[in-house]
Figure (cartoon, helix red, strand yellow):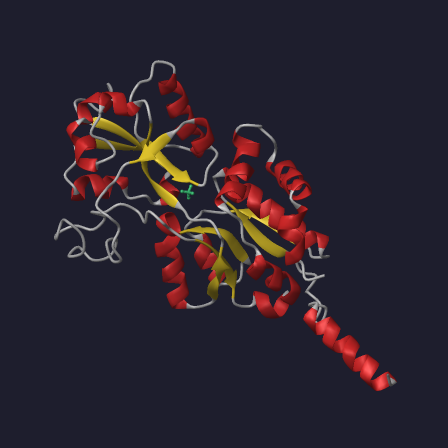
Length: 314
Ligand code: TMO
């Protein structure tokens, strides 16, 4: 082989193995952290992967809706958990304005909605139908809610529109927002001792499904436009008259400038994909095993090298 063809072969090899990227900038890649465990652990896990490739990474705690505007403007570099039910609308709005893009889907299929632990069915056997739930509203009544049922919704920044749904479907429920994800688990845990019926906001993948078997309430099926156009859905005069998507996506989002500024890190981000089981495990390390998120991320990476080592392009 001549020197010339050897060089060509080396170049081709470098290209195919991903070594041909321009160097990533030494500026920090900014990764946002929100208020539920899988997102925090996953963000640290991906941050640690990028650091192992030589990148600088900075974590910022941000609002989980406003983050899409920050990514669009380049103040934040990426988002690792774009849940369709909670953040689809904010993500789409930022996408339309320009500056951020869809960096691909995780393998995971997601659902976020009204949920109850299985013992609740003893008091309300018609579940999971939302109409049966509504007929049973009185069994969920508390001193605070009078003769109406209590529904504990997620923290306000998840914009679950529980109140709008109650109004749109004319339900006998009072919507209370939890101050944190931990308040949701405390509510279920407190009800468990005497098998008191409760209905709270919950989601999958999550650690909770391994701890408390339960079901989502079946609302009128999600239809595109249900959150925008009153004419869409069972109530022609109201928005939010439907459940969240039962098979929602979990996407990654990236600032448009990331590709040129940190090409290798961007390539890795596009390859990142976690399954339902992997995401539930990340949450469990924090919510059950009580690890710090950074340690949970490191432990998860250490236990699962086959999952992520192929994403680093080296
Ligand atoms: C956004 N979340 C997964 C907590 O519903």
